Structures are given as C-alpha cells and as structure tokens.
Amino acid sequence: MHPASLSPATIVGRYPLTSFFTLSYLLSWLAWTPYVLGTTGLGLLPINIPELWGDAQTLGLLPGAYLGPITAAFLVTALAYGRAGLREWGARLIRWRVGLRWYLAVLVGVPVVYVATTLLLPGAWAGVQPPTAALVLAYVPMLLAQLLTTGLAEEPGWRDFALPLMQRRLGPLAGTLLLGVLWGGWHLPLFLTEWGGWPDVTWRMVGEFLVAAVALSVVMTWLFNRTGQSLPIVMLFHCGINSTATLVLAPMFPTLDPNTDSLTSLLLASGVLAIGCLVATRGRLGYRPDQA
Figure 1 (cartoon, helix red, strand yellow):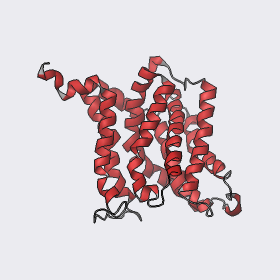
Figure 2 (cartoon, rainbow, N blue to C red):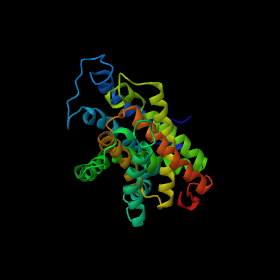
Figure 3 (cartoon, rainbow, N blue to C red):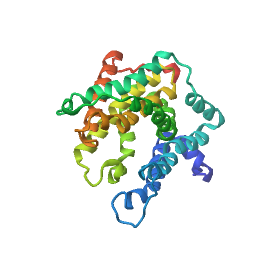
Figure 4 (cartoon, helix red, strand yellow):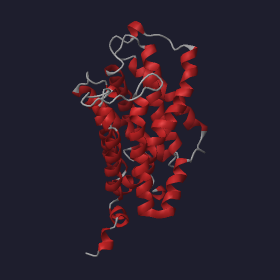
C-alpha cells in the first residue's frame, strides 16, 4: 500500500463519520479528565476547577464541549470535503430564515411541554408554584447563554455534520436512532461529576438520560428536516430543554428532586414528542433525499 493512501486526509475521507465520532469522544473525554477525576467528580486527584457563576460546571464542561463535536466536525469536513464542504456546513449553521411559527413553536412549546409533563409526576401538584415575572425575564438570557455554550459547542457536530450523512446512509429513522445513542453516550463521563449528580447517580438516571437523548434526537431530526436543515432552530430546541431544566423546574416544583425527577419528566416529554413525530411522518421525519 502506498504511504500516501494512509495520510490523515485519505483515512478521514474514507471514514468521515467514524473519524468524527472518534475525535468527538476522544477530544471531549480527555479535556473532561480533570473535571471527572478532580474534586468535582471522583476525587482521585487534588484538582479544583474554579467556579464561575456559582459552580464549576462552566469551566469544567466547556473546554471538552468545544474541543469535541464542533472541532471534530470542522476538522473532518476540512479534510474530507475541503472548502466546498465547509461552506455547506457553515451555511446550515446560519440558516435562520425560517417561518416565524417554528421559532414560536420552539421558544414557547419547549418550556410548556416540559412543565406540563412535570405536572404528571407524583407529588408535583402538591408544591407547584406559578412562574414569577423574574423567572420569565431570566429565561431569555439563560437561553442565549446556552446557545453560545451548549448549542454552539454541540449541534454543529451532531446535527450539522453527522445527521445529513447518517440519514443518507442509513435512512432518517435508523440514522437518527444511532446518532441519539452516540450523542447520549458522549455525556457518560459527566455522570461521574457534579453535573450528573455524583455521587448519588443511579443506573435509572443514566438509562433515562440515554433513552431521552434518543427520543430528543427524533424530534430534532424532524425539526432539522422540516425547516430546510436550519441549525438555529435545532439549537434553540436543544437549549430550550437545558434552560427549562436548569432555570424553571426547581423554583416551580420545589418538592421534586432536581436530578431524578427532571430526568423522568424529560423522558416523558421527549417520548411523547418523538412518538408524535414518528406517527405523523410514518418514520420519515420530514426527510427529503434532495436535501441531503
């Protein structure tokens, strides 16, 4: 075999998805090592992550998040598809001109559905509190912060890079299910930190999170396809979930456990939405091969 055939560009060009997921996991997990092994996690090393905005999650999580999916997507796209591929990848990232109804559906629908499913949990009604004006006003800044952190770090990789290739190769449903498993699995080391509730983490919490990640992927695939592959809509959906879980649920439901009950509620909400998308589209999730 000629040495040129083993160059990084050649290998990445032949196996772009494998290269992307390998890099995403490797770069993120390596960067998260201090967060996992330090005092914010297993406590095996005397590493103290500085706090920012009241906790160490921001500085503990963001380096690995930014070094993972978005960096892997950029590198693989550049090596495998060149400038034309980067232009296509970047175009989806700024494709914000979609119908106003999509923005309203995501901005209003996400917190409404998440709160509504939380009301179904045992004991939720006993101590429920209506949202205050301060809470409603704080939601937008939280959403913007999530967009610049979680949304920007993750979705240019999972949905902008990986999803179009996986739909083309495996079909919309199989591709989405596999992507959901890999997306959820990428988070697993974080369950050994304060982010995941360590040391009070249970297998049920991990399982509910992974199943919810798959269900949410179904909804995000449908949003991505139905909006002409608009990444901003997908990012708003993802960040709306995080913002509601982080900001809204605890003050509205003070009697519930913020770790376990929020995951159960997320599983219920994502499951209902995913089933609705699957039934309404007969499993096609709005996919059109001419958009791939």
